[in-house]
Image 1 (cartoon, rainbow over the protein chains, first blue to last red):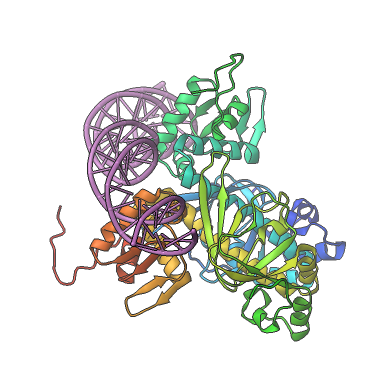
Image 2 (image 1 turned 135 degrees about the horizontal axis):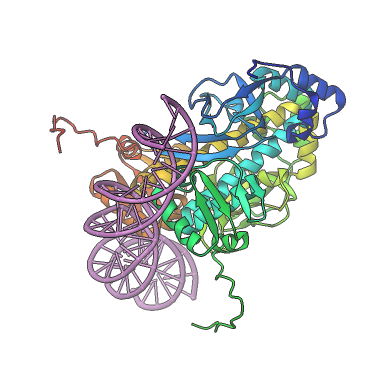
Length: 247
Length: 247
DNA sequence: CCCGGTGTTTGTTCTGGCGCAAAGTCGGGC
DNA sequence: GCCCGACTTTGCGCCAGAACAAACACCGGG
């Protein structure tokens, strides 16, 4: 059942942090100016450098945000999930979108034209404060990632990346926590600052220890606690062994 | 002439991006609730994890923002200069300050208690929008840094770091562009995700080519264009030599 | 003027992880 | 059911850059 733009159901906004604390009139205001759109897997939603005409939020699906360098090097900045906004940075900055957005799965987005959302923020300052909170959260995450890339070795970085993915996009199953969208080793590499080869090697090692299980575009975390231990570089939790501390 | 807190001169706010577009009453409002404080070199202004009671802006001096990891690894996130705000992230997030702030030089800061600034933003939405612009700019910088750390080799990263420092804190002299505050090789290393040794080696190489000149806690960029070329990994600009392209 | 501490340079060794190469596997389309 | 392309795994050699180590320069203070 393909279809074009349509008016959103008001209830979708209630899950979005951007509108926390907004009164009913405000919601109506926001809804009235929004439009929604279906997205198909692989679709390029916007590209780095393109002028920013609208601000996006994802209702359903996953969108990969990546940035390419002059030298051709790519880095995956994040995967956007339902309820999250994206393409917001360009709204406050000259120079168009700072990254590419590509749909990792089919989905639905909701969007506001830039001036509309700007006006909305001036009319309802609480929305601006919510936006600050969101951007602040992302900034903090990026700072942590900068530190991580600066100081941690590859294995720990991959572990951290998987831990974050599991938290953000993990589906609990009886086998463990499963990343709920298709992701390649290449993409994991571009999220951690390494190559797909190293990601594959490291994950193979973990698989041999029963910590994770990999498949084609698929990752299952069997022992989340062990992964966290790796991410924090704690000594692996020995079942029972009062190992000497000195040394 | 040591002294304690004092009422700020209203003119200092006019240079600050946060108050762009604010009317006179708004300025008065902002000024009335602010206080200023002298800072001495080496002073710790706040530490990672400490509860955030106030939001800071620097009137004069330089402040280093750094984040430490559980493993002891440190990363320098940025150096704050006059007119810039810092400690703002904590205002929008639980968990206190996400990083340490240490004065790199003597200086003066102006600060607002967190609830005061929050209220100010609700009263004057344009301030919130300005804050979004600031945070957006920082987020974008961090994203670029993540990509850089993910994809670029050490030499290029150091070049980029110096280029950014020269732009942000460069003083034009007849010899070139001079970083206008004391900075150690260690700190440059922590800004680029490498060791002070590697920074020293790389800079020695550049010094031999006349691109930069180093001193104790001091850097002078003699050939900014050459540094930019390194940062972008362009082939070094040959004065005149149609060198063969083939390997 | 000497002295100690802090910061810098430089050498040597060692290794994590990248580049290259090739084979293997999976899934979807025809 | 087969084939093709996309994705993944694994081996191997190498090198950028870290770790270790030591000497050296500079600055401020006594």
